[in-house]
Amino acid sequence: MNASTSGSAVRRAAGAVLPLALAAAVFAPLRASAAEVTVASTSVSPSRITSGEEAIQTVTLAEPAPAGGVTVDLLDGNEYEDLTYFQSTKHKVTVPAGQQRVSFPIRVQSATSAGTVTRLTAGVGGRVAETSVTVDPIDARVQDVTDFTVDKRIAAEGGKITGTVRIKSPAPIGGLAVDLRKTPYESGAFSFPYYVVVPAGATSATFSMASMAYDQPRFVTVMAALSTARQFAGVIGVPKKFSIGVLGPVRHRPGNVENFGAVGLGDIWHPFGARINMTSDTPGVTAQLSVPSDGSIPADQAGAQFRIYVADSVPAGTKVKLTAKWVLGPAPVSTEFTVQD
Image 1 (tube, rainbow, N blue to C red):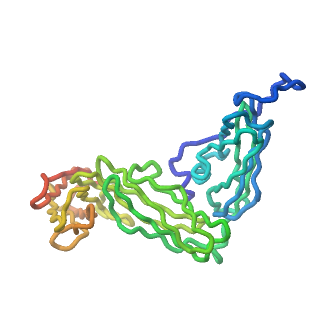
Image 2 (image 1 turned 180 degrees about the vertical axis):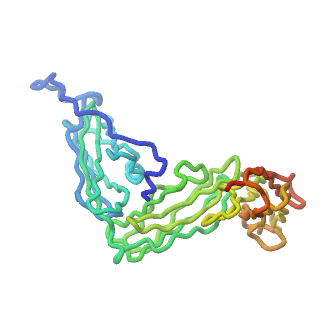
């Protein structure tokens, strides 16, 4: 799966090329206003790259930019937005005053099939210029994403988790971009960049993920991808307060994804750990924290994951209430879910 297509809004390059203004063809003013400047062309060099490599895009105006410069809108013309290109350009570039062109480094998302064409557009002054870059997959025999780890599993709102991506061989000159995507795409659990660059000659790079789970525990799967090479890590964001949440459907036989949830301690100080007792209001449904047997969450952790077990005797459609009690701590917190099958 190309993670950049999962749930993303369609961003199509808009605007047909308009004819150049006919006025002042001979006696043009020596200094045009920003509103009168148009784009003449855009290009990419090299025009064919291997996934993860950097390219240089150039935008040329029809005339030099006036005082204050000219801001050019940049978009990819693909069916779905290229998030890697967005991060590298923020969809804007400025041509400095007195200059007629500007060149800047770009990254585009890696390709899974040979000859993948990414169309790019640059627009200003009612005119749009288009170019493209062809992206080939990386040879997995030479280069690959071999590992993706996180320094912790859970972070409270405003907290950080550090991810580390490792590749098979040293990155080439210019570095190598590894795409980062999340599933579900719209998850509010964490924010992080759309790619991380492994520096030239290095085999690893780190990046930061910021927890945004302000209201309830939230889970997201983060994917590090380079062509068809993909590695995954799951992280959980929790509010700053004591909280509990079920993270996904709960079934009798969950299959590849276990029934699970999280208890969040947020930013509440617990220097000696936090002992949590989990209870269910439904016979046949139990929850067990993924911590030592006494239910204590260590002082350096903002929460803990728990597994949910459902007996066959519990009918599908049963509503269950789970409660977490912090011994000698804040008032108990509860969450509800419905057993599915």
